Image 1 (cartoon, rainbow, N blue to C red):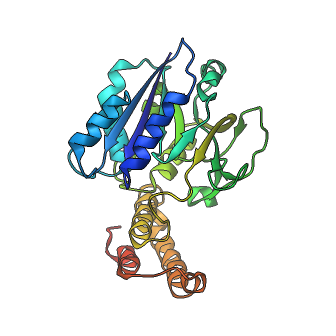
Image 2 (image 1 turned 90 degrees about the horizontal axis):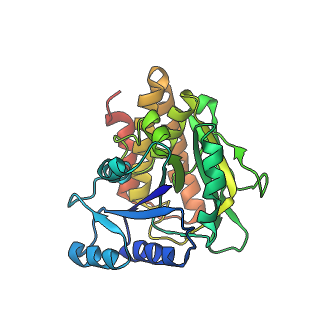
Length: 293
């Protein structure tokens, strides 16, 4: 059985190198063939970074520019899909995580389960700054998919359980299912790709589940802030693209509600929490008016 692990270097080469190096400590059963593939979305020294990854046994890819997260994952898959069979596994993950040492020992039983049904699935994701504290254990769509609510509680520690939404921080599926749902939405640059692929899976009858015996740790104090102007800008863009794609008939109403919420956040909530606001935050709001319907 083959497992292709795809990650994208964005924000920090040190995170990526630490993640790939950490894979050396993980036990991999002899009947598994695990390959690691890294797409470089803008390292400071591509030649040096590529050599460092090669020394760690990872394959390096780049288009010489930051193409975005979902397009990078699609490029990695396209380059390596010919080496995989329909039932081989694909792992798409962030570069700022750590996988538990027994992670791959569960894939024999997972293969038996996914042979019967089609799945997008993921692990329980724990925080690195609080022992036993869960960062994400899936989530659910609200209002027929208009928005997503994440969960941070574990329903059961031994059995897979259904969810509406699996985090793209660490998403696993088979080649067959990935091609059925159409891959990652290439129109998303950063953020939004996970909402899109989960909703498409739901519409196609593909199950989404958390396998809690799979455990990873997410670096909460990572290389970017979710409140930064750049992150805020991409989040707003992703919402608008997502609604245009899946809720075209009501997107004007959704944009209006979103504008009111964002203004309240920027003018009041951010100020109360002491979160600095800059021109990128307000530039993000302009997308509500300027992005085509």
